[in-house]
Length: 192
Image (cartoon, rainbow, N blue to C red):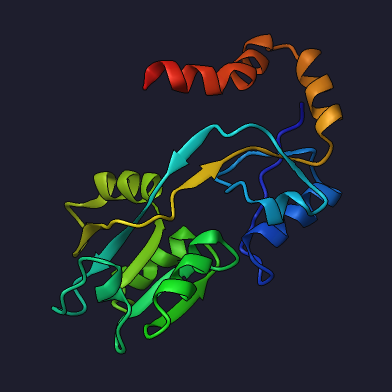
């Protein structure tokens, strides 16, 4: 297997950059990619769901306005940073139309928008937010905001050709990985 690191800071958006990469650079894309029927209709395939996550936000100290839930976010004067071309952007655009939305290329840019007080909130998946906040809470002038939403997301690997991917996994040096991918839904069920 050849591992290629890709820069997805692309003006076309996160999922469009994934499709372009699968056309030219790789067979499998591993990242937090939400499985959606509309995405599965494109030129790619998804493996089984390997994780389900909710949304969360990093809140800047830019304002003292109450920002505890989606209704609070959807107000004139609230500025929200979100990664361009993601389901998070779709969620923010549908639920926070009164707010000013700043689409950025990646999570690092979202953090910068909070640190430099250019945005009130950076909304993304809860795993990314929790990990970043745990590592930076003592040095950032911000706080974590969790909120209720129906926007839980199921993540899967994105593959160019499902049959080729499964065939290469069967012949891979690490059958353990193949086994984990094949039985992951069962493992998650057993852990719950």
